[in-house]
Image (cartoon, rainbow, N blue to C red; front, side, top):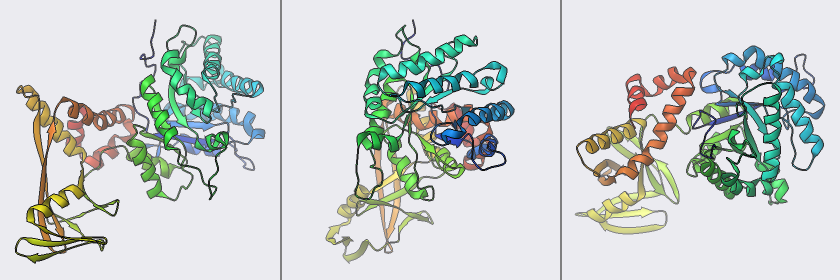
Length: 436
């Protein structure tokens, strides 16, 4: 008997979840957005494309949306570089809506229509408690048996848009693998903060969505416990690139490496965000925020107004940070700046460190110290800082996550090989593919 650890999907990571309306009113070709999305390639193409026959498509256009999906996916599906998971209609409190979703799955999966061979699964919105998840799973199982498809061949992803669905995350580990269901087909757990806010009856003074960090943490935890992949919901301000990056950085610290993308531009940003940077960078903490230091002639220069540094006398310095001013000797200054700095390693840094640790293990060493040093320049005064970080097996395993992500992307997205080589160089790409 299978267990919750039996993954029925190949992807270990999904960076981008991109939705597209299936039918647009008032257009000569109502499927034009589908056709455009189906031809995205490289960094503009998502890991998972979601032709959206629910919220993104008007109810009066959804029948036409199913026809459009069949036409476009049949024509372009074979060449699309990511996975294809249409979103159908569903609602935990509406048997009629659930039946409509079943009919949409039945039509899309019909081999005579030519689309199912290019489909990887379906996205089910507005799920409720775990029994509701099992209803959707059973419908997909019925469709697979109706058309002679292997059970579990169609993945199922759900959108967590209610308190019920959030509580169901805790039941997944126990339920998956029971012979009474095929929940092993589950693939993505996707947050839907808009409907979740409505379901929670939440209010904010500005009317904007609450950040819901608890929901994102719970979804990430549920995905980790059940061997699934967690995806954050949409970031509506599509022009706020900095805010989108900040959201992704917060998510990545929770283990949620994927995010909903609303435009090809957001897809590009989200495809690149979890990948290790091309070059390493030193950052300096200033007033509860981090400022990236500019590299000039091997020095890392702070050029701002929040920090002042001047010599007070021999080996004495006056350091002002905001309104706080102190006089420090050379050692104290070095320690203060060391405490305020952090280093973001590049892909090359990570590969170098992992290779060095692997060589040490081969030589019989269980742990080694790795030094990181830099020269900081503030107001023309140079200060050398350095620290040692102990690498043991646990550190090595933690460092593997960005490398495993890189390898997963390379394996599943050959259309991005050229761009990855352009960013990192072919030699580094080859090293990153074999380390670990």
